[in-house]
Length: 176
Figure 1 (cartoon, rainbow, N blue to C red):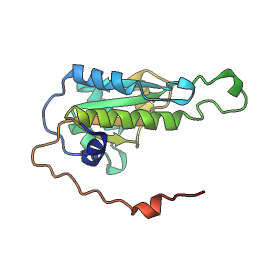
Figure 2: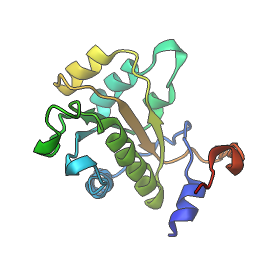
Figure 3: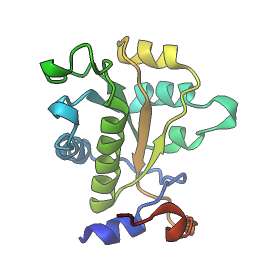
């Protein structure tokens, strides 16, 4: 499938069918997404595919302020842990630790959601964590967990929302 078509079709799904997702497919998506580029090839991430009770506990931790109820309905949550980045030694003392990690994790997330779409799954990136301490305990880490990605099959008949975007001239310029 052409990349432009995937980008046009991909949306943040919030209505998931009660249908399991094959774990081998999730592993395949994460393995391929791990090929995403990162600063100095630091790969400052660890992906945790959560199912069953672990997924339910993570979904509860994401549901503060009345947000992210859809996380509980998604059959899979991928937690993206930010691990310490190892940059080239010439950057030591000049570049703060993990300076580019948020950008790198964003690139990884884009790869995951596009690979999910290419494999017939829908997704939603979740960047709000109401209970970071509970998430860290659940994943047995002291590292930050900046985002989750809900994965699953869209509920039958759930409408794909229209994409409302700013005009190109508001977000893009060409300069010399």
